[in-house]
Length: 273
Figure 1 (cartoon, rainbow, N blue to C red):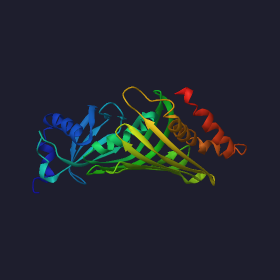
Figure 2: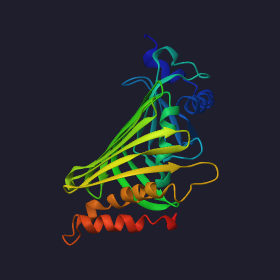
Figure 3: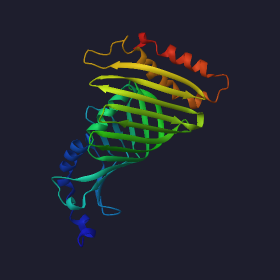
Figure 4: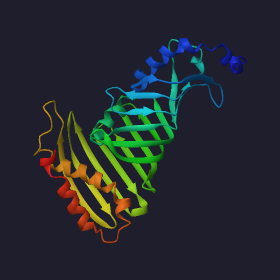
């Protein structure tokens, strides 16, 4: 501990970069593509700080741009340049992006993580066909994983409405997705059963004291999704897309829940997928 305050003077940043990259892909399935600056901080705990980062998950499922990455180091390993060991990651002030259609694949990313991730003061951008779809701003989130169990807890603002999302991945292959927008009385609970590339389950949807329940099947095999088999899943998919507009829809008194449900069913026409 006596040398702890003077570690930054002796830390070899160039030697640590390859170790950092290897540790990130091994422990969190993240590729470090670029950064503008690297430094070592001793307070509040020993950490490596990278600025203006560009990260991507294996397979480019998730992209992370700008902001800072803090790698919270183990005390017993703070001078080992070749084999970086850390307790968790802290990502601050970044922009996250991924495709709406890749939502189910997020569970694989969480299960493969071996270290927790904390996110603060960042934005989440959802894309549809590589085009901007919606943005959840000022998110705070925690990725937790342990023994094939994982969870995401996320809060932020969607169209000036506070939104809460929880995604739980169980080792029993029974997953749960919960979305809550309390300001417009909207709650979605999705229960998923995983079996290789096949999902089935149910969704309970409550909007403004009105209720809708859906049962669905989804098969994402190497030959591509079967339209008939995935029809109910497409209804669920479009439901979540349309519900993301609820904070805006709530501003217009002539929009009723019945009209919203009709829009969901029409938008989910399987011939579009």
